[in-house]
Amino acid sequence: MLPTIAREDDIVVMIDQRKLPAQEIYVKCKTAAEVAKAIKTMVIRGAPAIGVAAAMGIALGMRKTTATGAKKFATEFYRTCDLMAATRPTAVNLFWAIDRMKRSFAEGQKAGESVDQLKDRLDREADLIHDEDVQSCRAMGAFGAAVVPADARILTHCNAGALATAGYGTALGVIRGAIEAGKRVAVFADETRPFLQGARLTAWELMRDGIDTTIITDNMSGSLMRAGRVDLVVVGADRIAANGDTANKIGTYTVAVLAREHQIPFYVAAPLSTIDLNTPDGSHIPIEERHAREVTHVKTTQLAPAGARVWNPAFDVTPHHLIAGIITERGIFRAPYTESLKRAFE
Ligand code: MRU
Image (cartoon, rainbow, N blue to C red; front, side, top):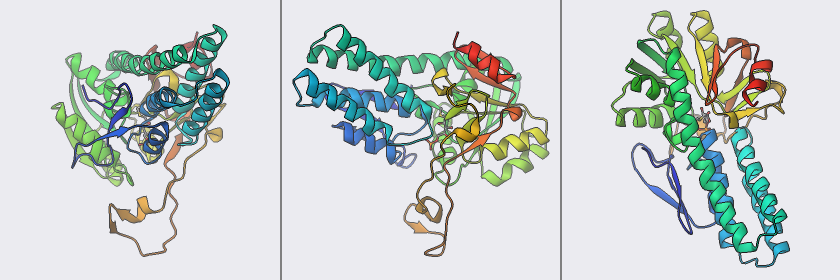
């Protein structure tokens, strides 16, 4: 399985997703600040992977801190949590993972644990978050396989694969699960402007697994659907509101509208850590806006006139009525989502 991220004694190692597929380089983060920077600059990206990185970054920061007294250690812990929380705003998995680390820390404090015991506890919690994410993806894959026809042409957007998780993937986990269940799957990977997660990352990891993959640019999906060449759409999510509205990579909404027009089922695959029952609907989801340079340039090559005004939202919201089902590690949930998603947590 792809090594997206790993925690070692005094470093966190991650594959540099900005460099793929041209180079397979591993970044070694020695401090919590370096992990935070890696999240912000997209060395690591994808909602579940960001959550795992934040948890490992917190554990690393506390393992390395010079604070020895319980009070100073606690102050440093909360400061490190804030550092991670300020990296990217949309993926709720980030805040979910930080909250889990805070809960574990509070339990340790309540039990009167020493600073060394607290450090061990934070390492264990981060490892647990990592391992549970892989298990969730595999469960999602098994549930999701049921909605995939025996001979399926599946369109996906962005990269919701092993690279975006601790391993196996959410949307790509469903594709892997379907193949493991004996189905024949051909994938269309949207290029996913402007960061090109589809062309660079999805194509790379699927081809590595020998899965039939065709890249299209984002503006080709309508034509492809109209030609009857897509049976199913499956995408990941960065945050799912209580009513099922789903934030995912910019362009996902366009794909969902096109899928509806062509009567193609549009599924979202995401772990429960992506579902945010505290956000009532999509209008309350914070949407990250990223630097203009991602749009005006490809690497160092400038495409647009210097000084051109740019709008670069990293995500959009797909309204729940366009979603055929939300595939999770607890099964597939369908409309009305306000009720079904609440049940998912029971
Ligand atoms: O900006 P990114 O690359 O972090 O955005 C990633 C996505 O939008 C993914 O589809 C989403 O996080 C789900 S990953 C399993």
